[in-house]
Image (cartoon, rainbow, N blue to C red; front, side, top):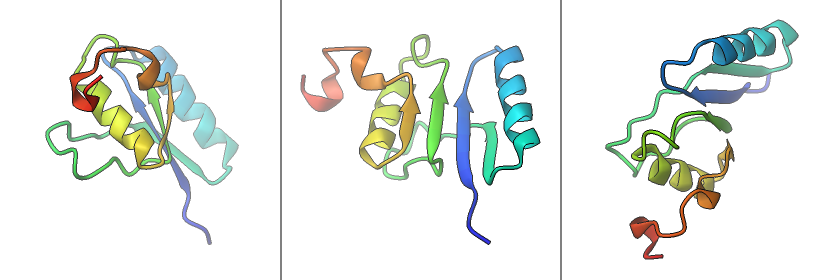
Length: 94
């Protein structure tokens, strides 16, 4: 059996949308696991173990933005592209 694709949802206090998305993905039984994302923002040398990240919080909590950018560069697909959000990110000397 193939390894299931992993979807992580990065949220703040919001619960209605993430819970509904997790339930719907689980109901479909399509080889995808959806869960609240667990990301260590203090270690950028270990990208998140997700195939897709749904970003619902980095516009409020800026420390997630460089982590999401790194995840994209490592091949993770990020819904709500962090590269479109800020033009002057110091991490990339822009």
